[in-house]
Picture 1 (tube, rainbow, N blue to C red):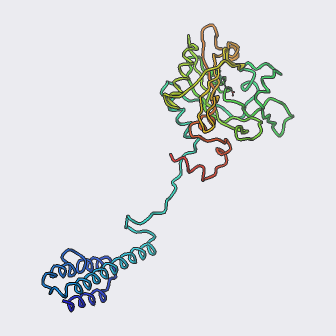
Picture 2 (cartoon, rainbow, N blue to C red; picture 1 turned 180 degrees about the vertical axis):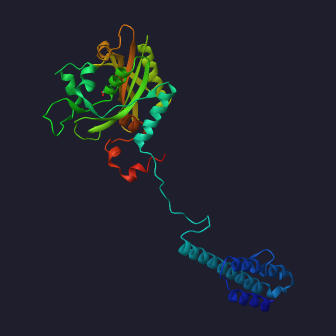
Picture 3 (cartoon, helix red, strand yellow; picture 1 turned 90 degrees about the vertical axis):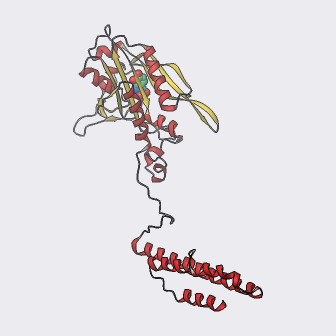
Length: 336
Ligand code: DAH
């Protein structure tokens, strides 16, 4: 019996494992259910009592040897494969994680906003970022030299070959697109107008010199304030879930009368606070007159929301600058 065991031991040691086939042959010969080691255990009954202990020990040793030769050879085969081919088809091996790229959180938030307003029957319109005073201010009922213009911290733009004037501006809001839309087309109008806007503000965690807005405009016969509020509440629910806590407050904008703002309740570790997400109101008759729409015949509502603020609330981002740094470690946290 001991001779047989020694023979198996020699066989194991001289077995040449060079590839997956010979590895499998080794396993069949020594380690499988019908292999030589297992059959030897089956002969235990024939071993005289006083030899059982030593024979058993020798058999166990040979079994352990076979297993370790097998494991080592297998690991080596896999690592050779990885070295030469850069990959293995052993699915138990850890895989280097790869980042496939994703949409920017602002794009993701904007997509959600668009989807919500598509469901509510709005289409998309857009306008230029470089605006003139008429569209950005005058037609929106900002009186000349009125302090309301200061609310907006405007960047004025000068064409290099012309004398300085205050006529060209980087748009301070997306509301001028309302004017362009209504100049082009008589009601009904039901559009949203996403876009980038600019303000000459200090850069802090809460403010930036550029950000994104989505303007909304709905003009038709007998559009009411009730429809405005219903639309905004529907938006808040679809964006933040039906449990969202919101409030609507009176406010002032030159281009709407009456005007309101909507706040969302935002919980954090420190407790919670109301955060403004949009301004809105009923289109002021002076605005209709500036674009030749009859205010006796038509009414409408408008709103303007901050996409950055909405994205920050949606994703729990507490510093607006993160949205513009393009730090890959930040962006990777928003797979899409
Ligand atoms: N344009 C305003 C702003 O940038 C936001 C706004 C308020 C837009 C009321 C509107 C509106 O259309 O009706 O602060």
